[in-house]
Image (cartoon, rainbow, N blue to C red; front, top):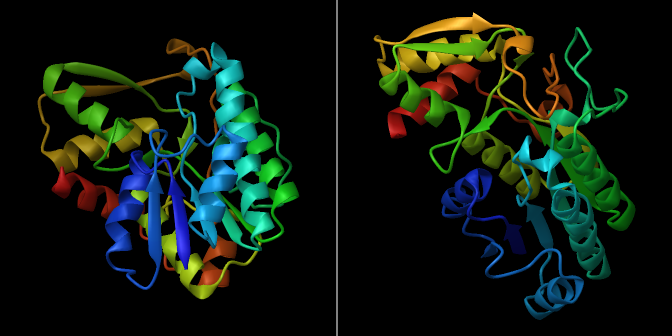
Length: 282
């Protein structure tokens, strides 16, 4: 198959490129904004047609959750409109699409892991635009998969793991929120799940993927420091109110992965094992 990967310079896009080498049966077209502007309908249609694209994995997104509250128009263009344009272009070729979405489509008031059929209720610009992107893809492409993920990190780009390692080395004390609960996702594990779906054959619908387990940001930070060998920084727990941000975060956003595991025969790694693997590579 000829597969278009958008957002190839991001955390997930970079991990996809590493795994492409293990899946040489397909041809890959790795693009970022310099190679393909996914907000330009004519450019997308030309690219997809010219390169005889069979499937699209859209890893591109506006992910600065707080800045999104100021840049609503651009955030909407990238997260809501662009996925719909990609989906419409690949539908014309009878192809498939995988759209990456987020736990922010939920308001975080659940007390059990979210399943794919739970009611969505985003309470941030980022969450609302990502939900609109999900809906646009499903409406435009009959053979599409939505994969919602959470707390993404990797060896690439800027992310929570790298920031906590840097701050742990710079500071003697650090306050981290303890009353927001979820599960981290190592981008390499998500990339592997995407390849599992591509290789087995896309089954349309909404899926959830993160690593296994449940923790708070505070617990996550403690584990990051322990694994990275940082012993000089005292991490103290903060309430959400003590660390106000422009965008509201879900207080509880644990995702139930049963559907993706059963559909594609995926075994999901435990968060701490994946964290240790990532830190060993940093």
